[in-house]
Length: 399
Image (cartoon, rainbow, N blue to C red; front, side):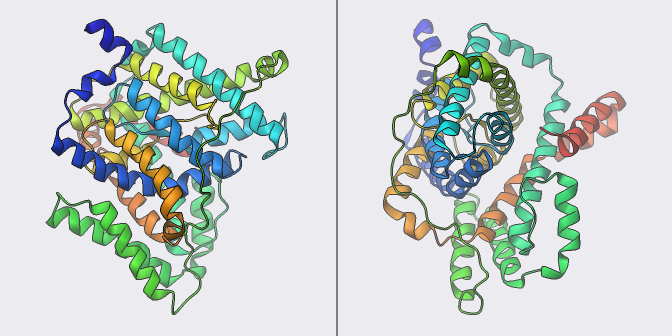
């Protein structure tokens, strides 16, 4: 049985599923599916890919990563950092959005997955255990602020250049404060406030999902007074098609170094997120198994029109906050995303970006381990320096 579990790690959590866990995972999955829908499209654009490739990645990658990974709460898929690096790596070889660009990105994804799988099989995941917990805490806190800074413009209605640094974003926000849109602010804060209120009064209810619906209905009402409420917009309504990476020797040679960098970045992201959530759930993570899960998801994804991905801070936080109990939530989220895209994409397209941003702000706040940070600064100067250096590096330098 132990050998079987090593090959199929999902057998561990499959035995733990009950009606209660399935209900909890269903709610978390539904919340995650709605959250990832606009995000995945945006990330694909950042990566230089056609928008639908972000959806394909969010449909395929989480399923494979959940089946062969280790964390019960980690959600994999397109991320900001990986998308930025993908664009930087391939845009010097091909025109973004072109067929050649897409083919090279799929090859890059395949190679990154191979690197990650080899690292996992070689048990390199054990090296993660030597990384200070405060490195993870600092990285998580920094990433949470980066996530929040990307969402605030949607709530304030201030035009900010996408992809700018943390400082550039806040300088733009400060200089554009005169553009403040009161309608978007009302929608965003109402979403945020209702989600917090539901969590305090009825914690068993899906507060994030309810918050989004409150924001959606409020935006619908306010739309009679203004036309400035931005929504998710039109969503493609088809499933991931089969794809073939470019296995020519020239492509493999030119992309191998970039693929190695993306593989490492993806593993650092996934490991940091997995460990961060594990401190809240007391789950024991197997880093090498997580490496295998990430590698397998990228390899399989490259044959289903999916580009390089990793663990997502935002969606993992949403998954945990929404009450997920097992990796089934990630699988259900991917399957429900398929159904949403196929059946109710026209309705979801009316969901306001300000409501989505309100939910993500709450998630970003909850990603920060304030208790641990307080203890670190109270009792250890060296660990405080480690935390501060990691935190500031995450905010100020390229991920």
